[in-house]
Amino acid sequence: MKKNLIAGLLGLALLLPSVGLAQAPAVNVKITPAEKKMAEEITAAQLSNYLYFVASDAMGGRDTPSYGLDVTAEFLKMNLQRWGFKGAGDNGSFFQKMDLVRPKINAAGTSATVGGMQLVNGTDFLAAVNAGSVQNARLVFGGNGWFIKSKSLDPYKGQDVKGKIVVLSGEGLPRGMNFQQLNASGQRGVDWIDPATYARQNGAAGIITLSTPMSANNWERTRRQRETGGGYFVEKLRDAAPSFPSIILSQRASENLLAGESVDLARINATTGDPVASFAFADSKTVSLTVATDVERVSTQNVVALWEGSDPVLKSEMVAIGAHYDHVGTNPNAPGEDKIWNGADDDGSGTVAVLSIAEALAKAKVRPKRSILLVWHAGEEKGLWGAEYFNKFPTVNIKNVIAQLNIDMIGRSRKAGDTNPKNKDLSDENGVYLIGSEMMSSTLGAITKGTNDAYLKVGYDYKYDDPKDTNRFFFRSDHFHYAVNGIPIAFWFTGVHEDYHQPGDHPDKIDYVKMEKIARTIFLTMWELSDLKERPKIDKQLPPELTQR
Picture (cartoon, rainbow, N blue to C red):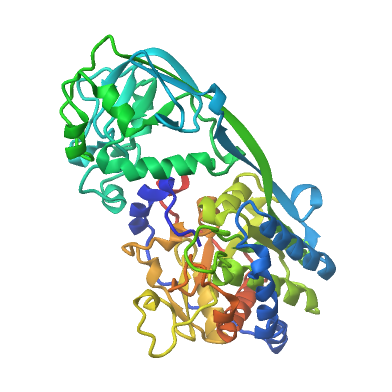
């Protein structure tokens, strides 16, 4: 599961109160002996066997992109092929390729001249990877650069920044604010706007950020990050970067820039994070910036398979079931001996649960009426990449998907007597959180509840459907993009714990007996949905703002 909220989703969490939490109508779900037998093909031993491979050190933590992730994809493909699944990815293959790009600074083509003084890249300044060039531009001071309506912060009020370089007092939020408060202040782009976006919107030609004694650590951290290059992004999911050069000055270069001005670095240092009274730079002091970039290209993949239904009409529709098979990789600089984030629970547990469900389908003597679509998403930890990509560029007719069942972290339990505060939200040995099952479709809610009541009676906990819950798990896993696409979803999750996004998330800590119960329950929920006479109706529409991200 993605640890932090995607920046673009910060404002969306406030919309959940309008979803509604009405109880789903009761349904009479009957599980036949034959259906139970199919589900019993999913075993704790099988899940353990698969997970010890997927979450082994040999996979290196399955970062996106990485060799270990690619090997995991091949492992999934191998099993799907031998079980008789059809490839539902690109051109009938099992993979949907995603092209990733990573821009890097071209040092030879990057330069900065401030007030006639040539600066040295890497020593006097660090450039962001958005390329651009501006020559002999005048300077305007923009304080901390944030526009926040609720705080009456408007850095360019009364100033014309068009065609000028904006000088900002430092990185980070205004003093006394955090991102939770920012999120609560309203909608991004309307009620609050980040410094780079606001500068571009006001026609600025570029940005210079000062380094003060207070922000010296930021300079060093940024220098190390940019030496190793920035992160990848999915090329087709990101608009072309605007021509907008942006650099951070060293403390010495910052002092030189302010030499002779009415505000010196000492005053800015004392007020970093707060607006500083506007002042005018000398007209004679101009800046020329040129930032050049090179682009590294690689690819990764979603794994997509189809189990064709038996009904000649209904088989054109699909029940989708999925998990993300990536995690966060290896950190050679991590303290301690363990450098690999194995991701056994997150989301090796979901990965192998879907694989075990696929195997149970292949062993069944009958087929479900509707087809079953299985998708293992890449890049969830980077920002739900795979799910967004699949929904925007589907390899199947995604409008024929009647529901999406998402499995993300179903492997851990809070044992009796566990007083670790990091485990306080773990579900117990018979519990699991069910998220979103009643947010869009009463029928989906009824089927998920009725199947569980008629079978293993796992303890379903709906607490994270509460719109006031600050964890906002509804936004933090792959199901989100299916919901935005108008597909009702249900998300199984056993809770965060002491090893969440830590190197200790190992397969020997998984509760395989509980995981077996959850996977069997999801299998039969999928089966009941596949055999419905009519697809689940969406009778609880998500707010329009939520579908227009």
